[in-house]
Length: 251
Image 1: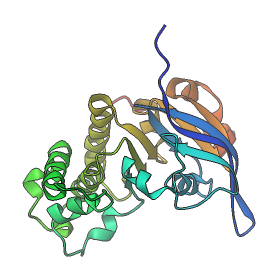
Image 2 (image 1 turned 180 degrees about the vertical axis):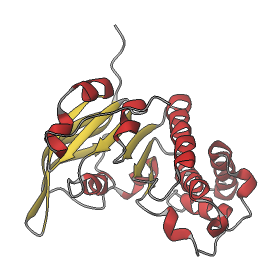
Image 3 (image 1 turned 60 degrees about the vertical axis):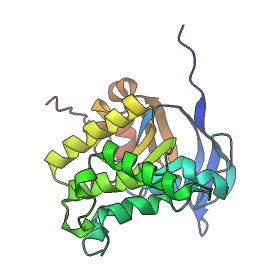
Image 4 (image 1 turned 180 degrees about the horizontal axis):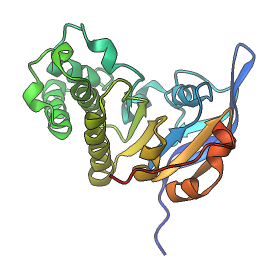
């Protein structure tokens, strides 16, 4: 019998409201170390709010969240999480910074140490190598394609040497060819580096092919299941209406 993996994220009975308007209610789930979790749901269903709660940017009205056993609002704990926010790549079109400067900014949250400069250089180089953007290091971020910018933002997140990588709909505006390469890249990070990944997306086909587990949100948690169980279940009807059908593209 395989050994049960340790939970790296624990969410217990979490509820949250914006100015008395309920957004999330009684959300409970666990994420095991090394898991690849797809988070789906309709617009306004609470996906981005959940991410902000996990990052410690918001505090739940009730319930408890623990990341590696600690409250996510603890500042010293934040370097364990790499985060790529929604639509960030598109906002960098006219930002006057090189790829090296963008990736290096991911080290700012690290604690100071005697050999920080050397350690930062090593971490930045390793992150760019993993993300495949080393040859772009002296180019301006605004001169890159959407897919290249996303890899740079991943490198920035990896420069922190995180245990968890959170991506909030990162591929908005990225062409389909670059998206396919990006998903393969994420799979490699998850498989080869053991990185725990949380990926917020509207692309249900990606969930079917890539993620190990799926979390369905629409105010309440409709499911937290293995991808195969999600595909076979009637969760899409509960989220989007009874007439929705799931179609996978095996190419």
